[in-house]
Image (tube, rainbow, N blue to C red; front, top):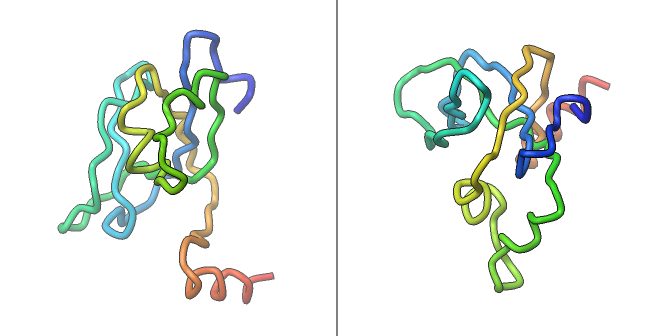
Length: 109
């Protein structure tokens, strides 16, 4: 991922392919990998690339954080970034974003 990060990028987000993006939302990007939109959780079955929760940012990212002590990177920061790119992968991925999913993942190891 580090080797894919270019100086002109504000950030690089790792995305993983899933057959059902309904629980997550989708990342829409150009042919060059620049993120053009985040599609919130679709209501119909759609496959696509989703945010895998791994990021690389340049040092300007701190200027984009809201002034409040509590904020969401996904909702308050990422959609506002210019020149945010995606690195797409078809690698295996396990969602641990909720207590139930974390517990299910722990059973695998």
